Length: 559
Image (cartoon, rainbow, N blue to C red):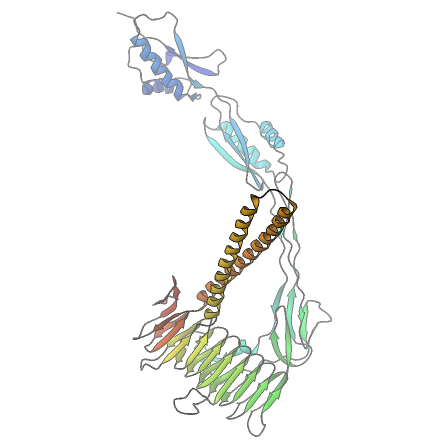
């Protein structure tokens, strides 16, 4: 019977250069497989080497081959099943080279990474900025003391991010009459005096209006390899010295009033409207026609007219009056009119305002607002044309009713209650610029089709002339066709850009043209958006009406 050895770590020995662990292939008593060979490796004194799985598989095949051979060679074979490996070091950057990370795979009975090797590798990669010496030492020491194959990774250098500059800003130091509207004084924590709205907003000569916060330049950054990273400097803007204002003589960043009047906001500054102050506009004082702003401490009475190029601020009521306003109209109490004839759409109160109209309530009035219409409590049976949003709600969002009338805007309508349970007809027309935008879209598409046909005609002509023999006349015609082609392609680009602008404008229209009733929407309310109409035949809870997926929809409103 053949003499066989036991499968044990005794079959293992190091190679001459000690870089590999060799397994002697000889006849053994046990069955040989990958698990049994791995087991004797783990039982040996060489477990700090890295096991070579490919070598294990090759050794199993060699043992199997040895068993099947009838005549065995006297020369025994050795297979390498493990390797002595030095620690592996790699350094990587983020895309902008603002960080460098070192990765060390601990040695398998080989040499560890030294601090000198790590620094040499950094020198070769030109890492010279933001280096953490503490991290370098810690990384080297840990990798030298840890188990074979353990991976350590750490950020060894950090660059400095650039600091972008900040744009000049403007800090407004006074309120405007519109902001102060209906801010009643508190009587207690939970009660206010609705009749005491405080003094009307005016400023005196020398009043501080706006302060400029200067821009900052910014500073460059630097990568871990010492390269400068550009910064974006802030933008400087000048204080806009509006009418009746001036720069303070002691502070170049401070805008002050030069006369007494009403403050108004400009893009990057303010102006002060000269102010005419009147107790009441009635038959005793007569009509008002003034170049500037007007403050009326009382009411504008029945049948009176007020025309001002600036703001008009009314502490009381506007009653069946005609008002033309070049700025904002602020009415602390209400705009009140009546039907001239029963059932007609002609009212005794007419408002034509280029700015925003703001009031506590309005009824039976015709209002044209060049910007927004802001009503705190009720908008009743009014005819409105508004270039901006129509908002009928108080600051708490708990009160605000639109009832009856015709409201036209291409922006949005926000209120708390829309309509009434009794079913008063109320119409909201948000069609606005939609017909014009659709007409422009149609015309542009027609022009694009004609331009495409023109380009095709030019291409056909170029193909026809290409078959003719070369001549001076052929060259002249080719040059003309090329010029026509260039002009036609430019025109096509312009038309495509025009169509893109039109589609953007249409999307903006649909985004803005929406109606929100945050509490309830009653029956007999009609909403027109685009080419669609929504008519309510019953009462709803909180509702939002808008174009969604190219269809007019009414869905629950979730604040």
